[in-house]
Image (tube, rainbow, N blue to C red; front, side, top):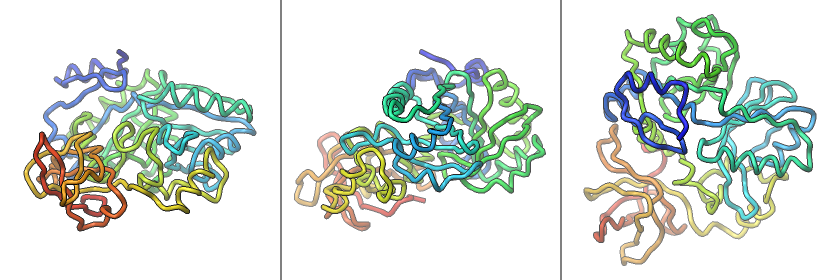
Length: 359
């Protein structure tokens, strides 16, 4: 079991630690509800150093990434970020990821912790035809996510970089809390706004402490994986291994906007064919009308009790104070307003398909 550079900080704060993606990670500190509401209303800080970081560079870097990823890398420029995915050869998804263009011939990929080895092997195999330089720095980089409407207020006093001049899905490199060369990225997984901060492991505790102190006046608190999941669920953001995986098409998952079929990438011909023939299923959001929490793998039925899909993610929404979920259903049951039934412990509970995001 791996640990991040901040493990002792989490233990000192009384965090409940759990195993996640091969790492020992904080599930919660003061409690899921308190942490969730703090991020939505004020600010919260997550240690997400388990995420992986690959650097792809050299004259062949663009060609490799344009072929390996589903989005159009040519739309990037230095300082810009792109959400994308690594398609597999069967029409599914190896992983979803962020692509940062660091400079003309250098990119950083941010991948899911559970897929670091798989993604690296995939890119390495594809790179045999391109010859780009590849460096896996996942074990040497820490990542803090400061999220919430007061994130700028918390961080601006720690840096001379004007954070208001970093638009969504762009980044700058600057000093923060006396630490140089911090990648300050206007991205996140909560829908509450904020920044993700990439630093060396050696600087992680210094930055963690400085942000906690700077945020104490506005109500910033540390937040764990529990709140991270409920926050992303309310926004309808996909979680790899739940909502998307090697067997789900990005088109079925509602990720057509990052699947640029006018470019030539891995298995793009299959996805073009799938789009032309029409999808058979689609990932939708739904709100529970009956009491009950939908969980991963629960069957979804129509009004006649016929199987039409399955739940992929589900939770009790702290903001809406009701249960919500995401799942794949047949296309004729995917329109907002459609009534569906979730089989919970042998009982069919009514739900309604809703448009994402939930809030």
